[in-house]
Image (cartoon, rainbow, N blue to C red; front, side, top):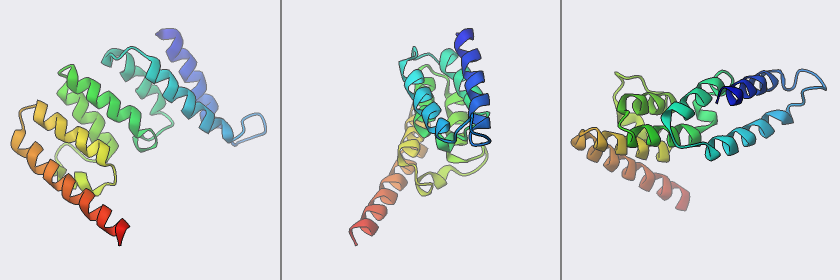
Length: 150
């Protein structure tokens, strides 16, 4: 694990320098994102393994630039009973604070993340909130579909 983190730190530096000169082409960023997605998908599904990888990557990537990894991590944390960690990951992705009303879930354009948030609320015995947010999410998706069909 330490070797992998060291390797990712090197890649983060390469990512950061991409586009600055001919030795670090901007295309390298896309390549690194694909490598990181494949690598984390192949990792053991344990919070203790995924968390350090996402922390290192967050040095150069905003959670919104890698939503799938953050959603998968939040779901993993939820399934392992780490509700606070799952909420923190989703709040970072959805750009919510802990005190902010989560009714904004359906308005952020990330329905998969909003759905993960609803599942987290349900698992944390916040059933009324989960149902209400799920209804808001469904209504938001219906509105979006209506705009597309119009």
